[in-house]
Length: 121
Length: 210
Image 1: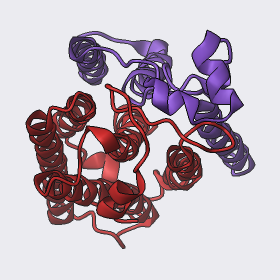
Image 2: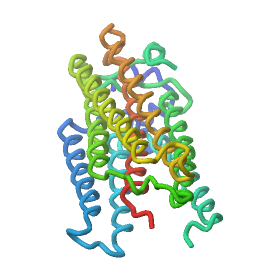
Image 3: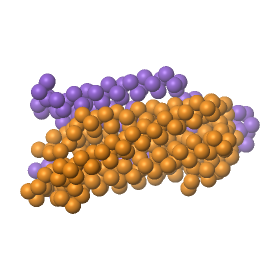
Image 4: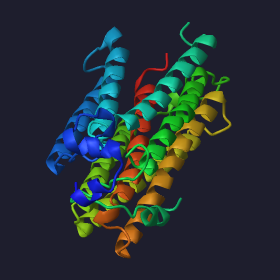
């Protein structure tokens, strides 16, 4: 961060630069290297390959573990993209809260909707 | 807002990594905050479309269901292509943030091309589905399927338009390290589209219908 930029700003930003003690104002931390991004992409590709592997159930019968396994792998991929590629791991927590609020609202609303329409029966 | 308008709006001081400091009440970029709020609202849109498909997926009215004609190996390749476009997108941001404009343009173009390959695959998939008797109005299941995946395809297409706008802005010298945040904001949208497909691929394609 340039000193010029820091000196022009309001107190919250100045606090951030002084001590990095405000988790809500940590925008601007250095991002990972290109190799780190590539490693995340390799993990994503491997998880996707495993997901597709479950489709060929003549190779291995996943049985009752199929759906939970697929959902777990989906969440892992979601987490990796959101935290690394979308930088939620490095940016201000406020950004993540805005997104999570919408996500939780959507999941809640549509779980209720699916329940009302007896999707689980 | 067009990409060039966003570029013009990002005239803040920036450090060596292209991070802007913002003279706002939060000390954060309100443009980026607005994008995150927008993406949060998009969760509701796609949540509604996914839920609708889940409710209708077995309603075939005696005709062919989308699940009967799924080509999982083909869709898996499309999914992989879109997933890798997230890597090229983040590499574009990384390059622009370092002031490497040529590399940034290359990665932006690569991302747009991968997105184009995904859309091409979707067009092929839709066409083959129609040939096999599953069209938009065939039954409630097909309507819900085409609406969901079609909306996602429109999002990817809009993302490609944004990426190409960034590419043109970069060629014209209007996209530099100073306003790398513009690339980051378009990148957030692009990664979100990828995340939505991660959900769709698992919930719609891979989890068995019955």
